[in-house]
Figure (cartoon, rainbow, N blue to C red):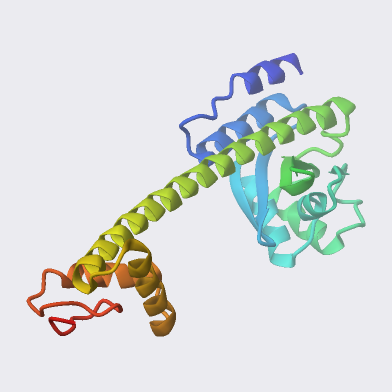
Length: 243
């Protein structure tokens, strides 16, 4: 366990793609969870499960068998927030249709651990072995929980980074919109000989009348200034001069 803790503590999250981080986590799980031979991470977003990373083809094949049926230990662990262990697929009775098929890809035992995330779960860490009872120890269960927490931290970090990026994009768009609205107000103030408040009222009324976004109305007015039409109407289209 100490080796696992040290390895997870050295895991670098910053400036990396989530897929790269999770790929490293699955490798660490295979190396450090007693009995593990192949590992995967199932993430459920919008009720759709996907294998976000895997170490060994056996884990990927076992996951996809469950996705095709909509049930199995990894899906049920993620949905129920409980750790689920299968000591021997030959004698397991909870998922008979799944266990009969997963034996064909070499899986004899498995351990699925939910991924904790903001008071709920977002999937599961799945560990597979070709040997019965290979994952039955308390040490395996505890090590799997440690890895699952590291996965949850990595996903939370990636989500926070994505949210920050979206916020920055929205701020940039808002600043651009404000700039073009101010330019359009200036055009209307000069064309209509009104003050700033009245110019904004003209923009707002045009937005409501034509069911167009305020910034689009403003952009049309600013763009029309370069046209030789001799004036603009509040909807951004050329108007008569002298009005």
